Each structure stands twice: as structure tokens, then as C-alpha cells.
Length: 225
Image 1: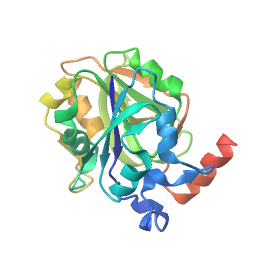
Image 2: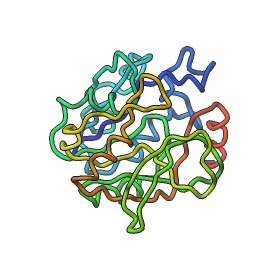
Image 3: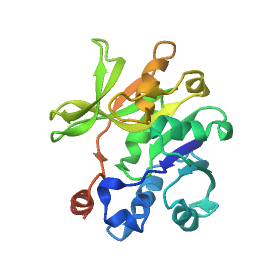
Image 4: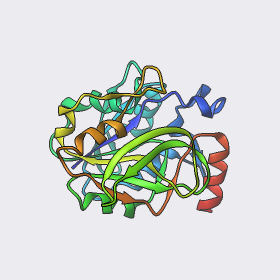
């Protein structure tokens, strides 16, 4: 099974740390964030496609063509246009069902494994503090209805983690342009289009460390120590 790791972003909110270092290579406990992403990959994943962009050559050099026994392939997102367009860059390299993850957040392997028990799935997390993100809206049956980007999402609200198990049918849908972010197309919002025709299971994560600021690196290190 293939996995797509999205690693093309500028890491703007992590500056000045990302002025010279790709965000997925910033460290927590002396290990790059990207290594924690690989730690969370289930055994079913035998090939990883890494979508690179800003300082992508650093990621290529660090990971190489084989990493922890998995074949690694790269595709470059030359124009950064959000998570949906990033996935679309890998379209021609994908065959069959696949996993999508971010390169710079920290996930629990058991949560990813649970996602893989479904044909299609979306991993969500219940907010522990108020923060920006994609609010996940479910109906009374617990089915995915919408993902709405908001600047302030209250504690206890479900948010998307940008982890998905998808099938090639996702590419039958046009990427959804985000109304609040100029020049970006969102993968969660595109997956919402898919649920009209294909069921997508919603799995609640036991752990998710969203790394968006230098302070988050310190918090993650404390939690992992």
C-alpha cells in the first residue's frame, strides 16, 4: 500500500527556524518531525511518495530513495496551492487505495492503523484548546457533512488532522478552493464532495500534536519525554 506525505509547505509560522531548514526536518528530542511521521506508518505501507517544495532538496537528502525499508519517491509541488493540489501532484504515481499524512504533525500509529481498517477514512481530533483549524461537521448518524476552516474553534470541537485513507475515486472530483485562503485548495473540503458517492469513516484520534509554532516543538518534547 502507498502513502503520500505532504511536505511542501513554507513553514511560515515557524520562522525564523524555517529560514534555512525545511519544517519537516525541525527537531523534537533531537529527531526530525519527519521521522515521527514515518514512525506512525503502519506495516502495510511499503512505498511512500513525498510531495516536496520549499527546501525540498534537504528532505530528499535526508530520506533518500529508501528509508526504513520502504521505497521512497518524490514529486515536486512547484506552486504551493494547498493540500488538495499537493495530493493531485502525486496522482499519476498512485495505484489503488492509499494513505495521506502531513510531514510535520505528530500522530499515534494505532490511530492510523484504525483508519486502515476502513476502505476510506478521515482522522479527526477533539480540540483540547481553542485554536484555528478545520471544524468537522457530522450529521446525527456521525457521518461527515462538512469541514469549515475557522480562525477560532472552541475546545471540545472535532477538527481535521489531514490524515486520510482514500481510493482513486477522489480524483474524479474537482479540488475545492478555500474561500478564506487566496490561492489554496483544501483536501478535507474535497473529501467532503466524495462522501456524496462513497462512504468515508470518521475516526477520532487518541493523540495528535499539531506543530504550527516554535512553542509547539517545546510542548511536543515535554509530552514525549
